[in-house]
Image (cartoon, rainbow, N blue to C red; front, side, top):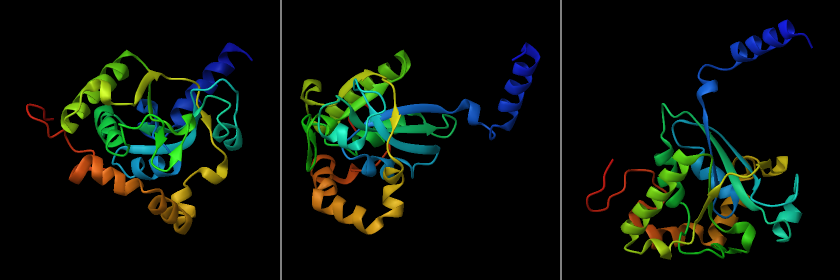
Length: 211
């Protein structure tokens, strides 16, 4: 490929991108069943796309069966592409915390095992700093020590999209999804942990902290 052709292709690629697409940022979260995390985060204003997948393990292109057999080291995750002009990473973090049980590091709700444990994967130092600050704020709001929280913060690993039938599961399989979510006790536990702030992304309501 000549340099001129490569340059033309690059110009076309950027020109063809939707307005603002080049400025999108990415966040990756593990919070138990990715069906639920996808459903809860994709409705936030400023979130452009949420993809269910796997990250954190040592097997390339893992399958759902492999991951849930607890042999690959992966967690079920969601990759969130968002417009930072419309929603800040800190707001995504708040919504993440309030959609997980941060006191449970052995899984989430009815799903047990390493593949379901909560993890915040950070892309760079700025995300890592904000993630740690959010953890401290969450601990304060819950009246807990920071060490009580069982959500791991770690550097981003390669993201592998899950199989097509997992994508937008709540939208395409509403009855099954709602039955699973209810029977798993997810919302019941979130209400117990977070009270009226469960599933919210509004500012922390701890003493001396606001945004």
